Image 1 (cartoon, rainbow, N blue to C red):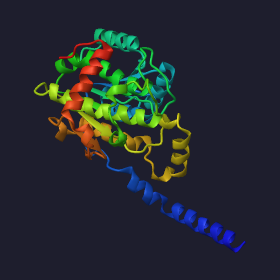
Image 2 (image 1 turned 90 degrees about the horizontal axis):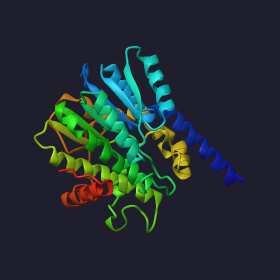
Image 3 (image 1 turned 60 degrees about the vertical axis):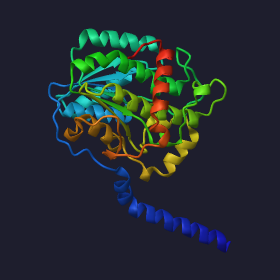
Image 4 (image 1 turned 180 degrees about the vertical axis):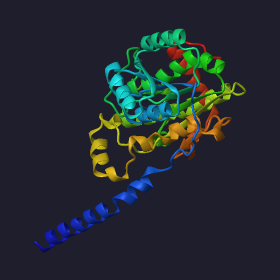
Length: 319
């Protein structure tokens, strides 16, 4: 009985301390904020997955800066709700919603074709949408879902819009990756997880693919006045973890250590607008500062091989 009393008392003390120090913990966990006051009047921005989480917060910030923000969302209805919320906060927001399913290359091509016929400039594209630790599923084209959406979908979208970005230069591409890339390996022998599947490892592989894509694209865009950088947004309270019960429980238990979506959006915003990054390309950022890249994310050989295989899977030639 005495042991039980001591345990309960100890838990009570811990809980009290966590409550008392919660504001300081949240402040520490928040990370850096984008300090740039840059305006984006006359600029056009495309953000994928902008109907929720850090994508929505990024859209709000860039709209307040004066940009025309095109929110590419799989669910157009939810996208319109998010756009309405942004307009309610900032009545002058120029936000538009367009349907885009990154798990379907036909949808990506249709989106790009309509986009190119209606939009004559594109200054910033933020490849933000993603799925995390979902059960084994395939995209419409038969790709493993996480690699298909997080990497291949954005790879194809960027390919289709790269000409417009070059014509609109200076322009920027921001790729939302993750710290999880440190734990990823590109499994060239089973890239689409047909032989075996682990949702966590597949997610890490897709986030490593984001970093490698950024590195190789930066090399190919050298001298074009189009830059590309990747970001780790931090651990953010969002819908991204909905497929993982364990992650949901962990995020609930340690919620005070997590960033809000607004805080998580800061590095994306920073890479999109910061004046000092106008010529910086091929780098990785977190908390609005350069961040560590795992050795496997710095391999030029792996980046080029993944590029070639991605083109083969998508049936494109990207010189």
